[in-house]
Length: 323
Ligand code: DGY
Image 1: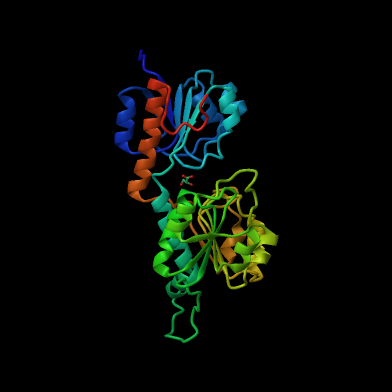
Image 2: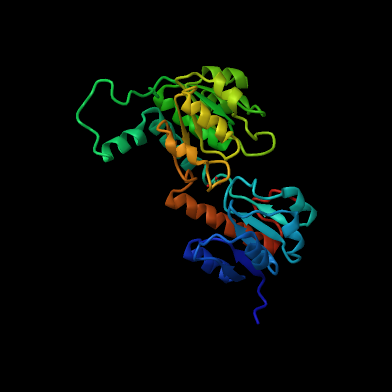
């Protein structure tokens, strides 16, 4: 019988990370990567001291009552809206996330969405692949210029800042709105000017969202906000589903209230609203903004290091609910 603490890894990770964990823990892992239903997840977690989980795994008070040995859950994500932090604190379960390691990769992908949406890249590619291209036309796939446009960033945290810095090369005007205004030196480095929510929506050619999901940011962008945007503007969301009200966005894209959208995240992922598929003026991606090989490795490694630190020293580096 092993006397090592038992831990669960809910989804596939890199082999050497499993080896690292196996040195100190008795590891149960789901390397087949088939998502577990909530009952299977609860059963597997019930005798564990720690878990490495992903944003599809929900941790709430009811689940915690079934896991008396649980000391730590380590999310492989910077966002942690899948975890009831207060319930974890009440149950004395440490929670960790993976901040910092994915900022640049997520900012790069935000720019991929900005450029693809503004220049209608996926729409044009679908046209070409369908064999419809019969020659160069002056007015074919007319898009929005990104250079010298006005970029509006909701949330000037680490990822928002990385997005802003990349706008310098495009010689853009950068506006931002945030509930917490960062220090002036951050504004200077990012060449970003604070404006109200309304000013941002009405002035930006490109609106991009970099806020965490919470009750305060639920449907931050809904019908009213979409109507405040320019009809030529585009909306980019690589933050979280639920920050945008998808039904309102679908309507706005359909009626051309705004020109386009680039989305990496959706309400009710992965069962997103199928009406998006009927629209040509939206670029769609399956929540891959942080998915470069190097960054996804760093995220998994950081989660494993948090688990190790939590169960050996009781003090993980990215502890979200210190008690
Ligand atoms: C995060 O880290 O929150 C990302 O959404 C995961 O890809």
